Image (cartoon, rainbow, N blue to C red; front, top):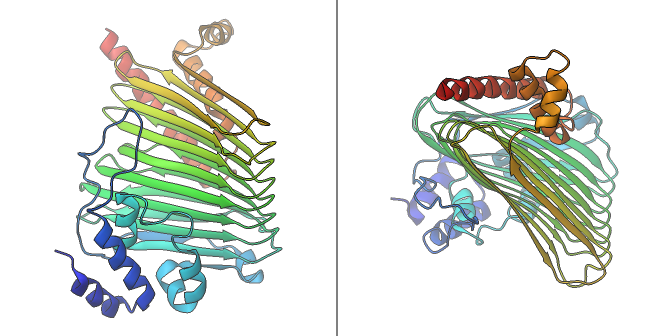
Length: 407
């Protein structure tokens, strides 16, 4: 059982700074007192998402692709534990500055048991042309929870693209708790793309959140292609005037998989823009819930909130929900939402089949077009190629299963 002594021993073992150990202990003491994050129309309280275990920092791999621009522009990009020793003031300032560990049980758990992470700091007036790529691989060859925390700070008027690839090796039942914090300083521009393909025996919780200052922009491109049960939160806080967030997500669910995603944009600064576009494809007996939450607070005059939540049902036994929610507390704003749940468009199917394209192939083509708002935004490279290959495999397997059960 973990105690204050346990954290003191960890401090000695990994030579962590006192402030980090104190945060771990404070968060640990809150775990049992806090509630799980709220997920509308979705129950996951019986999922194994808080398991006490050792930190095992060496168990899961974090790989950062070579990028000569980083050193040239004095960008800090390194393991979060090394960064906490080399740049203690910076890491202490920004760690848990966007997602606070006292908010809920799973964020507290992440801080207390964090065993993997990255600290990325881009100075002011720097534009990184090549995407910064990281690969995070959970080692499930044995019992080993992955508790990761990524902190990204993009300085004033700076610009960067970030690509994350999540995967698993091995088939042991494990949990993964993955937090990403983005601080977008005034005038900065951030693009965060992620391909998630965790193995089916993982139970996944994620929290990706950004704070945006005046005229800062962020674009989220999330592809949830995990085989595991997944619950998580994607959120942008538009704090500064003229800030902008476009939050795009796709999900492909298969088997008995259960997935629930909160996609939130909160307009706090005047003349800010918050956009959400979510698209899901459900196969076999899976369940998917997309909650789109657009909020304009009092004082955010001249702002815009718009969202689309669309789900394609590719199986008679799948369950899908697209839940738009607008919370508007200001008059001088533009706000809209759209939601749909249904099968593939028969008009599009008839058009393709009239050109001699077989039914199954035509169906997959329609789905690719349906998902293009996110697929098309992912930078070209091996991660995008991998994403398209996973999508095609899931669709083909799902079609085979459906047609087999129809016979």
